[in-house]
Length: 103
Image (cartoon, rainbow, N blue to C red):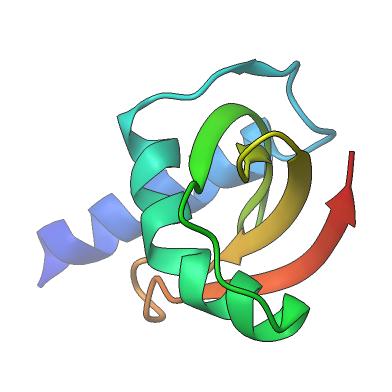
């Protein structure tokens, strides 16, 4: 139990140190692609549309009490930017779509 508390404390300190603005955009990585795969249904529901192409291209992230993601997504000839909040693992690590904009 003491080890778990120590690990959680260290993670909290790391989050505090890393908190701030969004990072520079970079090419999509595996973690980003996994988030896009999981959030596609929420995006389609919000836009009342389905997409045969839904592919992460690039992303920027921000550490908060969790993580904010801005992800540029190819939807087949057009690009949208989605903003997703990823909750902390100790809370649930759920994903919440917070914004969608056409690029």
